[in-house]
Length: 541
Image (cartoon, rainbow, N blue to C red; front, side, top):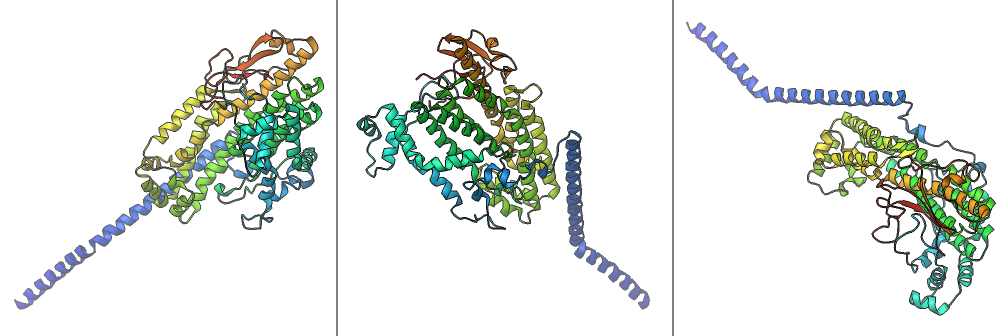
């Protein structure tokens, strides 16, 4: 009997022990199960993201598009054939190996010095304000004001600008001479650039191999723009002194500089090109009734060679891979994503509630989510931005651009955490800045097209004594082919005003014929690209 009780107690004790053991370790099993589920979730999301991204890259290859950054990097060229290897420019991309420190620490400072006197004088020159007759060119450069600016830029007392203009009492010719004297310290650099421009290639040795795309340095862009700004003022002074051949040579160098960074697969490089073209169009417009027939023919041919539409579309495709997908890849590879995002300045770009949570989700989430970010970023490029430029019809469509802005706005209006969970965080971060890129391209291309036709019209006037009543009269004798309006594919509008002037215009971004009235920005200092027509007319002297 006692033995039976003992056995029963043993069984009871064993049962109690198992129960207690299970209750003690159940949290561990739950935790183990939870860890397993999390690991399974991460593995599945990583596989799903990578599979979807690889599948999309396959679709790109089927369309003849590359997802490899190297496909968009312009090939290196021999130094002797490269404009950018001229002594003034070469040091800009000579770095101490493995660093971003210049081999010559004063490399950029030397080029900034070229611009110093111009910059000091420009602070005393007020931008022209008021309605514009020409969308790309202001009125003639005020050389009296610039000469006063140069005088005050070297005057410690820095008297009132207007008083200086009155007291100098220069004629326009004297002011022009003074401007050229003030710029004479740039002569040797300009001649060096002019000689180098005869080389067959222009390829700045940008360090595309940088692991962090945001760390790629582009010091040459501001330097090249400074060259063009100085050249634009030189052209104005040379024209005032009837030095037309010298002005023509300087204008040709400006037009060369427009293409100096043409092959760079970087949006900011193309935007600088548009800016350089606008400076050149100002110089071209100021001399329009002074250029000889052969000079006009040469300028016309040069304007016709610009194809900003193809260049811009190629750059958009490169931007998608190099700086969109490339940046996301860089974040994905980082062992400390949260710190990297902070270093990249992402946290300072918005104050939206939940933004910090979004960054934590990116840092802690599966790496496959970043593949899905790449996928959605590329798809938005393909669906929203690339269709704006139709190369087959040579059109840039404002309607498509507005649809793209609406799509991008829809992404932007979502909460940051939702953007992460829908894998569109980087699309919202990187794409909105590109929404006006096509518009600026259309404006630049229209400027080049209308400038080429302006050359043909001026050649017609030199031959016939007046401007034609219709654009058809200039083709094919004075121009091989008339460009159409890039906005709608229809002929550009033309109206003969009198023997000395005309209106040539595109309907512009609003797609409405405003009768040749150019849009003017609210500040009154520039063109309004969204309103009014894009107009070319001769400047009033």
